[in-house]
Amino acid sequence: MKITVTDRAMEWFKDEMNAGPGDYIRFYTRYGGCSTVQAGYSLGVVKEAPNRPVEKVVQKGITFYIEESDLWYFDDLNLKVDSNVDGELIFIHD
Image 1 (cartoon, rainbow, N blue to C red):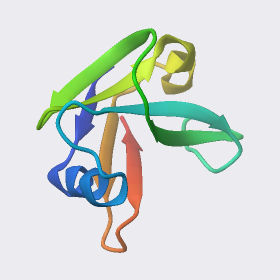
Image 2 (image 1 turned 180 degrees about the horizontal axis):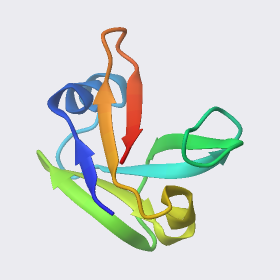
Image 3 (image 1 turned 90 degrees about the vertical axis):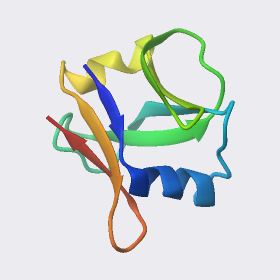
Image 4 (image 1 turned 60 degrees about the vertical axis):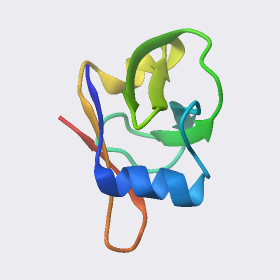
């Protein structure tokens, strides 16, 4: 699995979460919501230090990661994080 964060999404994290170099952004599984990957679950985002990361990428000094406990959600798919024209994060799994 691979995590990709687009430039538009990087701006979203900077503006909406006040993220900057040295910060950690976790993508985690949450119950409820709408997902094309796992029915009844969706992705959440939180700024917190990792515990047991299994996948990560560092862009512009910010570490984006997934914990071992959430790996099941991705079912061996890659994660691309983008932002749409309405300024909302979108998650693309391929």
